[in-house]
Image (tube, rainbow, N blue to C red; front, side, top):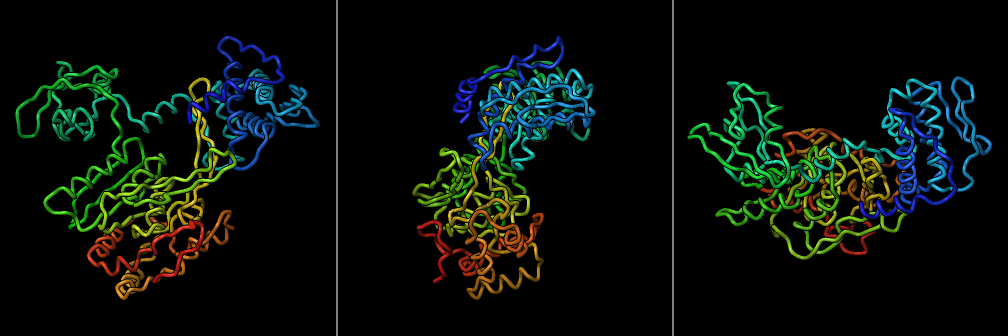
Length: 517
């Protein structure tokens, strides 16, 4: 997708042009702003979920000047772009005659330059602040998730998604004030060398750590990919060890697992590069062990989402062949169907998914797919309801642009946006309600069946009143210990688990839930 976005940058520079004023030394970088605006307008207009024109996007963006200085107003009036400050016209120029992104970007840059020269508050914001304000105001009119990310933050976000170069070790202070290994990524070089959380870090490249600031020590550990760092460390009971540890790209850890009361509990905190691999490994290890778990509990509470492909791959590990999720948008490339392939990692094992009101985006896609396909019982509360997908491109200067271009539909055809995932067992209504529901499930009855049917037969766009009514049957809440207790009960009581499952999904995929046998 990034390559496609970059291709569009070359296509953007066609059409009529204004002469963009040169930036004063140390002043507004007009050339950069024009390039960023042109690339962004080219990228957004054909992809936004709802139709929008280049002129409208530009006029919205120019209102960012008012956000920087309330005395400034920029507007399109009678075919002219007019910039005022305290009712005094600073600039008036004819609006471009067509929807050329380049022409409108040049016009926006001319107004921004005039505002810079006239308003101290605009100058204090700096070039990046002016660009940020342009996008903030523009996206206020589109949707809650489209956004512009400044260059430095974009680099940090990319490192969070893909992992940064290092050895997979974060330093901390021990109780005595000594430098110790705080967080150790189990997939990183430090862990492979034998460093464990709590180990004392004695020296880095031969220099003792005693009395040194953690920030400075972290900089000494950091370095270029392919280089290495020499560590000396000691476990709480053991002698000092030395190791030459390579610096590599270390995927961020997002998967944590443990065996708990016969269950394999897997918690996913976010969907980043490597999440699907981290999910499969503990299942394979548990099934290869002397005692297989009685069931799998997948904890997605508080998971804000992340990469769609990783969530689909996790779902693929638990599902047979079929649809995992669909997306629909104006751009033909925004509409797609993601399918799982034959074969399961844990065929026959019950799966319980824990969710709460903070479970969002890719995590909701996974929970909705497992529930809709009859593979798991979802326990908790209504989820966040983020069912819009963003595409992104890298802009001139290094910033990133995220644009909502499609809505997410679960396998049964209902939209996740605003609605969220309705659990099969609701814990947000309290212990007495849970006890009643579990007793009904033990009798082979699904007490929430009517609510589940209602939620899963809705189609986009869902009226707000209907959406709120459905979510009100199991209000969003923060996860609680009760969720895990219910999961344990279901795994220990196969009849209740079976009654809580949705009927298996059969195509056509957009139809209502079939009546249970």
